[in-house]
Image (cartoon, rainbow, N blue to C red):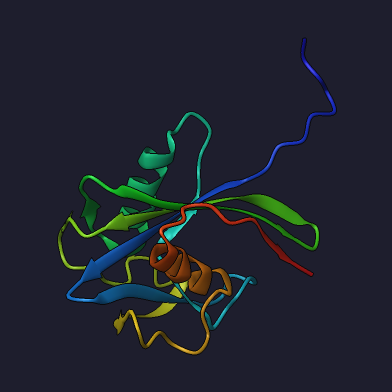
Length: 145
């Protein structure tokens, strides 16, 4: 039975490109959402894609690298105001190429940051991602007003 009122929510993928205790991040610009914040490469899953396929595509589009064998790190369902969805975060220590800003119309800066010294302006959930690893957990529901 199909329910016409069934809600659909975005699935968002994020890749932690890491090297020597550093993570590659991009600073959002001209998007209208979290501009000025440093974020992990990623984005929305397209219809017909698997979560891993979406991650590989998004990382390539945003950084120019080909992620190899990404490993699930955590799942973060979220509710924030009128937005609700699912974040999937992957560890991506293996990739081909050197990460860079491949979409300058969406990001005005990219850099490697020490995992213990992230930039001040990061998505609030990134701290949760790092804390989950320390506790061995893989799931946390997030809610912001």
